[in-house]
Image (cartoon, rainbow, N blue to C red; front, side, top):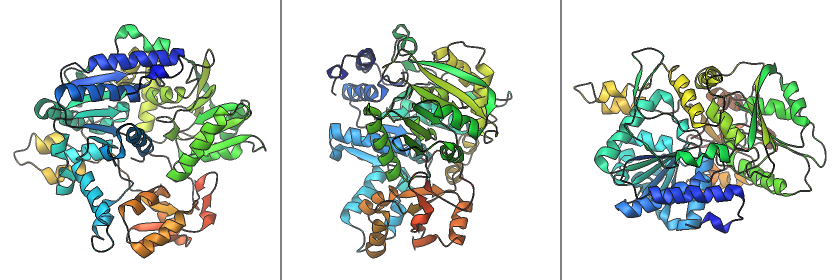
Length: 531
């Protein structure tokens, strides 16, 4: 693994080297549970690989599995790993590619490579696997043979759970139970990596005494407390608004700064603020959300990074949903973040003065007039508010402990799927029922292919050739996930075509805007994690 010391010896890079060396030392430790808690910008991604590779070599582990919550980060991480270890050693597996569709075309339309890749994703028979939390944990509780074929290859492996704070609290107990079983009985070593480490050790109580979380007995933190990373990597002042703001208010505040990032919670909020910002020749105003297809998002981020390196580009204003908060290395002197959980606030703050090029940047946490969507988003924000007076330094590990303590206290269940009842307390093991109930995301979205760049050329190929692995992978880059109501509205507008069974396309360019992405006839769709 290339040492970061080959990069410029800035204070931040020197700290990143220290983190790598700590991971190298910790790799000698006995198999078990480990955590790597490093503030955003501290180089935890490469450092976690240093630990994983050396730990695997020391103890004869067969493979490294990296589970990530967001597909956008998976694509980026998998490419980095392919560059380091070679494409033949890295398997990228997530939900953007439907191998069930390929299975329906196993005749002359399916290539050998397609079927080999389908089997590879079922088996995970690669030295390095990059996947999603959904694929990993739903496989652990699956009842279908195609999903269970990979389980034996998880044995005797190293498992990295990136951005572990995003694990859903409603399913935290069965997730922890599965991890403890695979570690104790099947030789798996587990590394939790994040800038905002959740409390997974010990016992915790939810909103009433009957709601309990039985955590892990011991998790070894790799970074010594005397590293004081949250102090040494402090590059930002946090400011919390005590007033509410309208979309117009936020557009005016953002417009006061030349280089500024604003992160909001929903797609609609992103569009509303973006549409209110001034659009002036020579100034760059960018919108980012999952109303844009992955190819459009990636192209826009490349354009953004190039602009940030151009000292002649004075004005760069970005309005984005949470997709910018993890895995996107950008640096702004000023960041605005709509109110959210403390972990999300700190993720956004990690895009502020990331490289320490100024003494301190400023991150402002604001409230909009409309309430937050109910459920998890409101719960996490409420937990942040409740702990604000308990810990002064919001970047400290003590702040995260206080935050997750408040969050767990608002949870009505840590086992929404009732896994313990179905698999542990019952005399009859209800495997199929348990599998059907264990879904980390309640997502009824449908993927539609949009008219961006040459997306429709790939649609024509799909009509002529049928699906193949390479073609479906390309089409995934031109797709947007929409809710069922919006699917119906697109259908009513005559914009939707069912190209093949359950594969839809919106071919008219009038339904895809070059700045904001897919346009429907109704309100903007609320943002969710697309895993």
